[in-house]
Image (cartoon, helix red, strand yellow):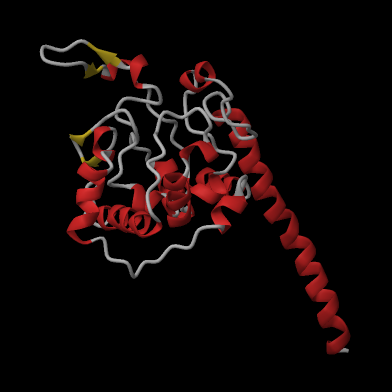
Amino acid sequence: MKRLLMPAFLCSLAAIMTPSIASADADGSAILQQQCVSCHSITGPAAPTLTALWQKKGPDLFYAGNKYRSDWLETWLQKPKRIRPAGMFYMDHIKPGEKRDMVDESTLKEHVKLTAADAKAVVLALSAMKTNSALIKAEKHDASIAPGPLGEMMFDKIYGCMACHQIEPGYGGVTGPEMYTAGKRLTPEFMLSYIRSPQAWDPKIWMPNKHVPDANMQKLVNYTIHLSKENFDE
């Protein structure tokens, strides 16, 4: 009798559990529609013109499952911190200063905060968004390649990345996202792919393709991972 009851019990348990999983995913999708699509694209495609690129209010999310580390994203959505010092398009957020243009903080909006439950549901929905998976599968991260002093030199001087990106708070450019948190928030494969060809992800983006050799790409990515361990954001 027990053998007969067990399959029935398992089927009943599955029937109870399955809707809750589907519900969590549906809630995440609903939250994205209600609170996120006014600033983020969740369906694509990438901006087809420079004008469309300049009008973006937030990064595209239709490949978020390939781009972000889920654990970081879930935490960040509950307590967001600004990643782009001068916003998405810096020309909209600068003002003249005594010596140079300065970021106009008054023009930058705070990101919406989510509850723990909502953040988990949203991350579940975003994790399923994996446009450009072929680009990700083409990359293989090698954590054994130590960046060494050359990693920082390549970032700062050889490839000039620091002209647009900060490697610690207040040190570096402001026109692109900070890089001292990149190792926590981005997957290594996405970083490799984006360095290889920024325009493969965002055809009109102003980040140049530096045609970085594979070995140097690994060092750059591992350098950003090393930077993230400094915990400048805490």
